[in-house]
Amino acid sequence: MNLRHLLAARLDAAFARAGAAGAPAIVAPAARPEFGDYQANGAMAAAKRLGVKPRELAQRVIDSADLDGLAHAAVTGPGFISLAIADEWLAAALAGPLLRPLAAPPRVVVDYSHPNLAKEMQVHHLRSTIIGDAVARVLEALGCEVLRQNHVGDWGTGFGRLVAHLVDCGEDSEQLADLERFYTEASARFQADTAFADRARQVVVRLQRGDVETVARWRRYIDISMTHCQAVYDALGVGLRPEHVRGESAYNDDLPGVVEDLRAKGLLTESDGALCVFLDQFRGKDGKVTPIIVRKSDGGYLYHSTDLAALRYRAETLRAARVLYIVDARQALHFRQLFALAAAADYGAGVSLEHHPFGTMLGADNRPFKTREGAGMRLLDLLDEAKARARALVAEKNPRLSAGEMDAIAQAVGIGAVKYADLSKNRTSDYAFDWNAMLSFDGNTAPYLQYAYARIQSIFDKGGLDAAALAGKPTISAPEEHALALRLARFQETVEQVAATAMPHHLCAHLHELATAFSRFYENCPVLDGEHRASRLLLCRRTALALRIGLRLLGIETVPRM
Image (cartoon, rainbow, N blue to C red; front, side, top):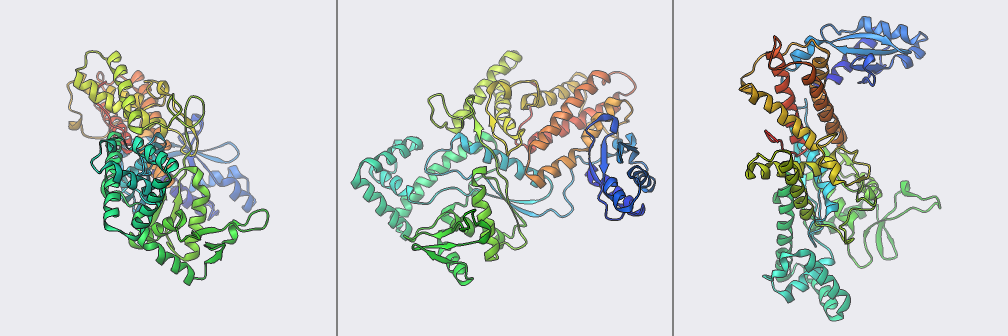
């Protein structure tokens, strides 16, 4: 149950009964504990319109509100309504499901990862991949039909030199085991060897014409490259599979039809031989409109053409209600133009088209993350290093673990640390990659949350208890119990917030607050001894469930002990 929505609905109805119909109850978690658990605003603006004192109207709203059994309300400040959730309501809520599906879950396309298949995945592909995967998991958990779309770069002139180099090396060449080196060698030959460059351009022509032999060689290279990508996805534990790949080449045959459709709708203008669309909202300070190039003067197509064809496919063929693009913030103008072009062409009417940008992952020098040698870093190498560092930490923390246990924990902690360090930041911001910070067992990190989960499991192990056999609802009385129960009750609203905003850091913050509240509860409320044992064990079990499911939504594993 979304507690925030429930409170807002009750207060909206109370505003209407108090004579302030239409005044929205803006409900948010209280920033200060003395104001209760939530604080609602709306009385001040409504009071000004009605000509009454804000505190007087707020009291009228409280008197009219149906809050019996749900919350205790009081007027605070200049006219805020402070709400403290009733302990009995919290106890009952914790006996129900942790997470419920949305009333009308939509079909959602999530476009994420989209590496360039000319070479292996680099560190800069990390953010789109893990943010997109977390958002997809959250949407699925709320009952949405999620269609993952991996819009890979698998087409264009660059593949001419790769296929030409493949012809010379042989399709079974050992060089294909290192695509980064293969790509570098092909590019160097293209720059230094005129004959090779001419041959590469001829390959592009044959590829675009659909020459069977050329297409087969291109497909061979693409398949090898996708094998490398899938190894990264498997190591990261993300949900992308080969069936989710629909790259630029998939829309190649649609492009002439898109151009003709834009022409028929009167949107195209020829400019220096290129076909462009001029939309007035992209007029600059000099009064000139920046053109959106749909087809170049040489007949080639650009990203706007391919992306427009993909957008039409997602809206009209896949019939998505939302299309989420998890793409670098530097592409913001491209997506503004794309969505405006789609609206002008009447593609995707009624579909929510959303660009969810993210910032750059920086190194210690506050520049885009690179290796010590100054080159881009393979993503698989980064993940291998994460696991190695995590294993060293685990061995130091608990040397009695078996080698197998250490390996499993290192996998969960290492990969989880890399993911969480990214997901816990507001995705629109740049962030600095710091091994020591992300692998710390203190603070807002994955190891801290994973350890909190393992700590709860140890409580049940110590008591020789089967957590699944516990039944009933807890009794909430101590302040630490109330604080913990409140955060557990807010799990639904937090997950829904992530689904609406594609901002996983809200869930990370919630899980960190939950783990911190549990720590205070455990320090102040004896669990295995005393008359409250059964009730407090239920709170422990619920907390472990929320941590496990919450981390799973972020794509992070939990382990029973660390």
